[in-house]
Length: 117
View 1 (tube, rainbow, N blue to C red):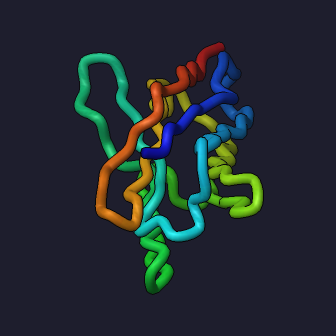
View 2 (view 1 turned 180 degrees about the horizontal axis):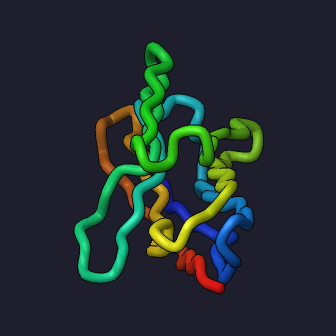
């Protein structure tokens, strides 16, 4: 089973940018779906962006449309989340998510993003 490791979180001022990375321990080429979720303090985990690779369906949360971009590097087994124009409401723990070809749901350990002046 694949393991996912996120990195790239940190403290950033409002309006700033961060790029999160999620490295898988094996190939993500045949994965069914992948994406990013986040969880703010006291809140449930919520979808940020998801990609269903079979058919290419890509969905962003309304709150991040136009600011966040999902990308992937299949050769490096890596998923990215470019976050621009960050807002305090974007603060939370960001989790990488992958559903493999066997429909197993995998999560990383999370990386903290704090947007504050």
